[in-house]
Image (cartoon, rainbow, N blue to C red; front, side, top):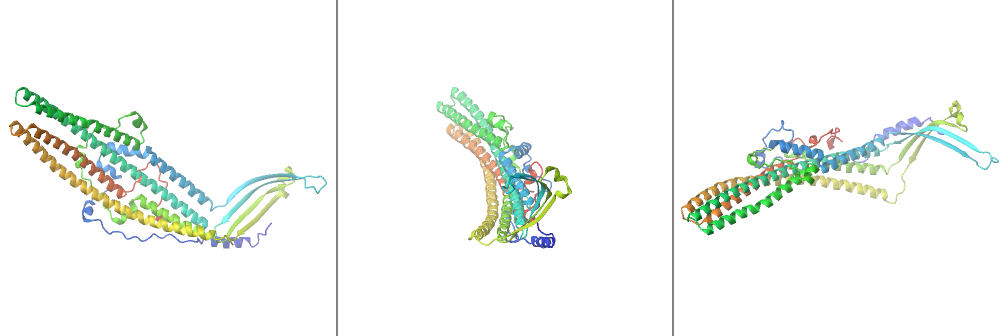
Length: 484
């Protein structure tokens, strides 16, 4: 048993020491960021998105919005990422609990013959509780909690990055599917036109105004267009199945249930999507992968404090109280009370370089995390630049294809007139029709690429107001890494 005198003052002194946490406090690395976007891109960032909750709503497509909602609820990648957040939150709870005392109840019953009493046995019965507490002298437990919280934030932001990627995939797959449907409609319309042209040539041949060669050429062109339909239908089916996987609709994946309206791009491709008015520095607050990288850096920085605290003495306090007696019936008597207060200190002396190696590893881990954070920022700006380049090129292709189609329509009109006038062979008419079909199919691809490029740029910018609020369910008051 130890005396209580002098114990409480020592305890208070240790409590003051516990307020000191060894290891470096986190400071956000200085990163050189561009002050403004390129002039062309900046000119597009004039839209006010205060009334828009989510960037995919800008397309004003109810089906697309429904697909995104279903993906956020049912997508397996999102579900796995959410489970990891739950796991990280549990680890944080465990780390927090280590900073508080533990109280355990226990019961002991012992009966023995020590061999020194001529065969008499001794009995002892104890009921009590044990209160134990590790005094956080150097902030090891505080740093451990700091690291666990940062890991939770890292996992949460990583989940948001998964969500953003899934949304981008849904948007891209949706537009790809609609573009394929548009190509199917264009091909079917061309087949109908070629069928009518074939009937006309047959009639002209019967009247002596055309030749067997022209009829056969018309038949060959018709069958060539028909041969393109199966591959387009196959692509549409694959795209539909890919969307079903993204939204977690197993019935649609396995049984071929059609959950999409078979509509082409129509006027959707002409929609002018303006970009959010933002600054390059705000990209850090929008992109979840950058926020996750910073949270990982915070955790690595806190691990240095945990490792350094292992070099210093540790102090564990314990208090035992209860009832003890040689007979069970005597446990309730006032004379059966027992108590004990103890303190155990451990002082590291010799580890043969193990602690130094652990500290070196922790500091190296922190350096790695910082470089990964800087790399994430660099990659983020590169992705924005690449996405803008792709979008600008797609818009230029759309404009060029529009002009090409206007020219191809006029070429076909003139070719048909000259053929009916007997100035050119029918093959030139078929060439003009084939070129027009190819131009329309390519125009659809360009329109699709433009729409997908806008989605890629929104994704590179991290969305409008972030993506975490798009996830169904509570956010559990996750804060920014800088608040850790």
